[in-house]
Length: 209
Ligand SMILES: N[C@@H](CCC(=O)N[C@@H](CS)C(=O)NCC(=O)O)C(=O)O
Image 1 (spheres, protein in one colour):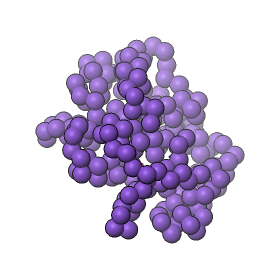
Image 2 (cartoon, rainbow, N blue to C red):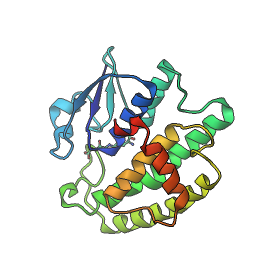
Image 3 (cartoon, rainbow, N blue to C red):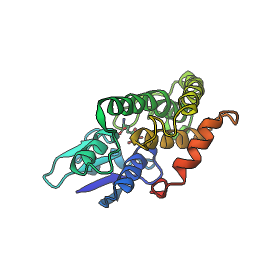
Image 4 (spheres, protein in one colour):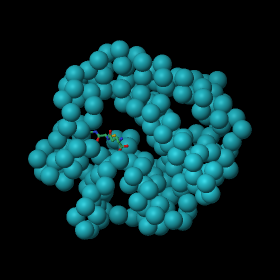
């Protein structure tokens, strides 16, 4: 089994943190997205979508999409449970992962990919040939700020995003916020609940994975 990875990219980081929390160690192969290595025939033969992370199983099949890869490991090694336990908590984890992916991850990607010259004609990840749209960078910033306010409210009454337990929702949000800050959309200082939660999740050893 191999994980196609790029150390500096935010989505593969979600898988690495998840694996570190589970105590799972697998082979990782670095693919340089900035140099377009993911769009070369060698990688497209592995995953025609050209996206990272990609998990290659020993039977030759591949799994992509971060949450799908994490769910594979949640099934093969259920403890510690990172997708929640019980119907209600599992649903809340799923809901928050989808919110963070749509309202934070995608928005940070829009800010970066629609403004930085290196992503000219690569404004969507993988094998798309899409021109940049400057307005999407502005909209991404606005939507991130709206999300920060909502997340801060959620964390006002919860130790972690869905309650008392650290879950894949926390991993997703930690990686999304670090990515958003990297692209220049910082969390406002007055959002104290995010600040407190962030110190907690970022000080876990897995955050360095
Ligand atoms: N929804 C996908 C997003 C994957 C994604 O966008 N990955 C980026 C790296 S963070 C990528 O592969 N980029 C390739 C490119 O820019 O061409 C997931 O969660 O796995």
